[in-house]
Amino acid sequence: MAITTSAAPVKPARPARRRSSNAEAPQKWGNPGTYFIALLFIAVCLAPVVYIVLGGFRTNSQITTSPAALPHPWVVSNYIQVLTSTTFWGEFANSVIVAIVTTVGTVVLGVMVSFVLARYNFKFKGAMYSLFAAGLMFPLVIAITPLYIVIKDLGLVDNLMGVAIPQIAFSLPTTVIILVPFLRAIPMEIEEAASIDGASRLGFFFRMVIPLSLPGVVTVAILAFIGAWNNYVLPLYILNSQANFTLPLGVQAFSSQYSSDTAKVLAFTSLSMLPALIFFSIFQKRIVGGLTGAVKG
Image (cartoon, rainbow, N blue to C red):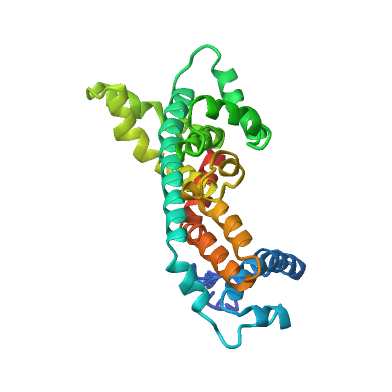
């Protein structure tokens, strides 16, 4: 007699559970030594700024007794005296004029030069680009004596334009190096399409090139503004009368005039550097983004 055995039903294999795409992988922390070194560098950079700002809220006796202590009590009269001084606001206005003229001139000339170097082929193009690149290794301090002679011959000594124009020239190398990759990355198809639609080269430049390269333009504008605001050597040689002093020179003159009032000098110094710090803090992401785009380009 044949014996039949019924086969046990085979259960279908369960599909393996997939990890949810929304589940976040556990965050991995880096080497603690790296964080320690980074915090150390941040402390070294911020400590002088914090000391100057807090020093303006102290009295001279507090600074002499405890140089590293916090203000106790807090004194605001130093800042009030500086802010109510016509000298400070006159030097502030001079710095604003020089910085704006330098920024506008650097951006306008830099974009034009970079557009030609990035989009057109002509003889000595590589040599011209190398010339601008070499300008990065030619600091202003080296050329200050012949530069002063040229400015004197132009009749721009003790004139704010005698400071702004050389600053434009020395800002162009950095501007060109940053903007050329941006403009070179614009596809040629866009330019051909604009030409078919009847756009001239200038029309393509203003309608397409400027908007597409706006991150780089903003980056070079910020760098030019901060560099012009903080420049000290060139105004020191060019400007003679205190009515034309910029804030870096104003800090030196104020320190000499109130050498015995350390707290007031610290207040004047902190107010002088505050606009550049605020400007840089607001636009620092644009600077990093612009430089990143230049490297990728």
